[in-house]
Image 1 (tube, rainbow, N blue to C red):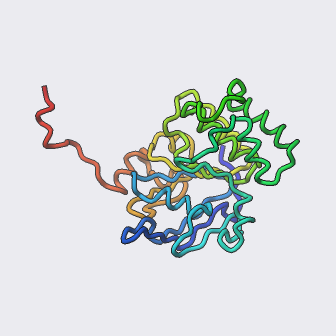
Image 2: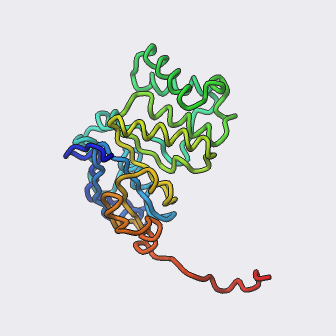
Image 3: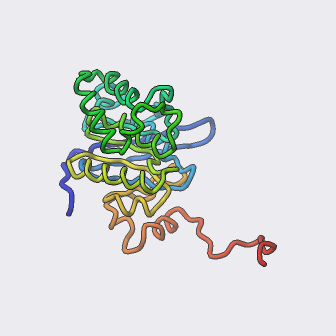
Length: 257
């Protein structure tokens, strides 16, 4: 079933540029994320995905460009823009000497939520993410999958209209990944917008209805999933857009037995 979207994008990026010394990390990107969409940002390692998402969520200031979060200029009014975002950055550093329950509570009260509401939502999130048994365990002792799930809980506790997730399935076991997928599908089905980055085409193709392909600091294609893949698999279309596909690797003949 097609999801209902509104005309105003959930996220609108205009002329985004970022340099690190002489390296161009993001080279003038314009991108719209439709409201109510499950949007995938794909690209090879080093394409600029994490840098772009960091600028889009207020974690990194662009050299040039504007970000609009549901019409709010993020860099002109960062508090109003960031209130509407739930963020799971790649390599996110958590306060891992707190328990899982304490971490969710801290994330809620840090956003000014009523402690009673935080308590109720914390219980619901721990149950939904299958973390009830680990609620009082220190996050430092969590597995990779549990850590991703508790980080997702901190991004969800304030019920943001937009979730931005950088590699949410990396190093996650299949059971935890299945739980995360189900929660994200329910969230989008209830009107939320998810932006998810990945270099795994199968993940994006199975979840997303819109996609952007990024390579060498630029967006090569963007739009509804079926339009971008143009009758092929997303993997084949991705290789066509970014290059680098080879039928045979030479120079390793000594590996043949």
